[in-house]
Image 1: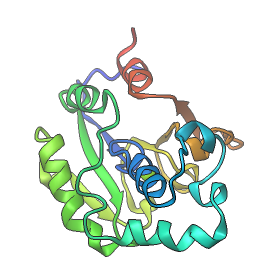
Image 2: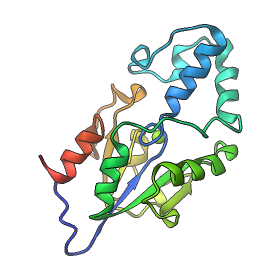
Image 3: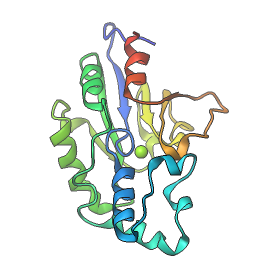
Image 4: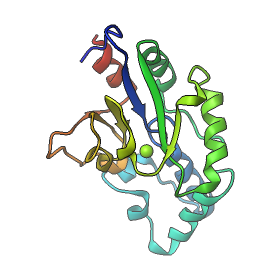
Length: 188
Ligand SMILES: [Mg+2]
């Protein structure tokens, strides 16, 4: 798939957590610090963090996510800035992120996007719950369920929890990293 940018700009919606921002990395960092563990993303292959830790510690995971500073200093997913800047020159790029589950996350997420993706207009930041409201040609997201009612083409961004997901309805294609996204839109 190659976008020309001519004959009408395509619209690309991009998820934030696990696609642009490494929220899972921060969750693991806090968990390891509190419990003296050495959990890595590799250990989570095919699982959610919640499935990989004892139920007695689930309360701590929820507390990390609800803490006011959790979303403040998340690492940037490799190559996302460069590839998104490139996409932004040929398409309308929107960042669509769910903030409703964690109301504390709204302001930190907004500031994080301004800091790390200054080339994107804040007018294209979409804080939403149900992503089926999105009207776009593509959605890049780590949650396969978001593609079920999405009108455009889904690009599943690989994350430990979705490594075993497969597209039964053929409504998405998998992207292992941002270099794969770059190749998908621009070719070699
Ligand atoms: Mg996500």
